[in-house]
Length: 304
Image (tube, rainbow, N blue to C red):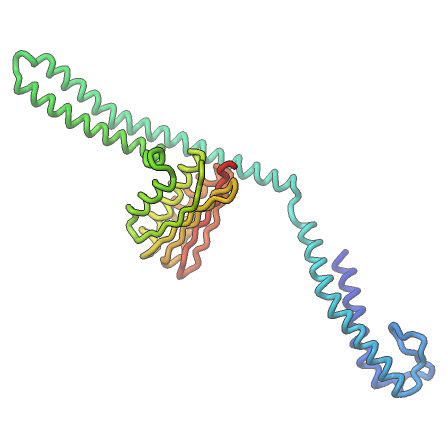
């Protein structure tokens, strides 16, 4: 409806200007007694002076109205369209709840799979080594008085198995919550991550304050995955990581100078980042045109 009304107003103004420009030179051919139209209505066209004066004034008036009204009506029409077509607060809330429900389900499935993986790692690896250690120590105790050399060999093997079991435990723990986060915080953990990166990495980390552990873990794994993807797939020689906090939002930006063209449907790296972030009601934006650069921008709620 607004399109029709605004369109008629524009056509009226522009049409009058064009029609006047066409009819003024032909005033002499019009029927006798014809009067000037527009805002000069009622004045008879009796000669070139009247026609040119009133016609020029009318052309200028309607051209000025067209020049002023068209942008104004276009902006007003755009605002009305945005207001009418944009989802309402209720619809946006419903979409947000739906997204959170889906990501929470994905997170729960991933969490369950991760727990099963940890259980298998502990059962098949660490637990098996601990059982072997216990058996060696039992044999060593039985042979303590009869065969000192066998005891020494069993103790040495038990010692080596203990060190291997501890190493496996550290690997398992690192996949749950990196110890460096607990020891050094997010800034220190990212500094260590940048140092270990396969390509040159620059860090720009602002004052982050206190951040919940879950947000720290997601931020850490997001940046770690982005750096890994850049090193493996983008042919990049340099990456830049920027982490800043603005009120209750933590923003992360990872940029590389690679060939671009990142495809979320290939592999699980970017999809994993998105699932982690969306599970905490965050946002992920990926800009990776062909030829690069690739920029991954993440925003997370971290409390006030």
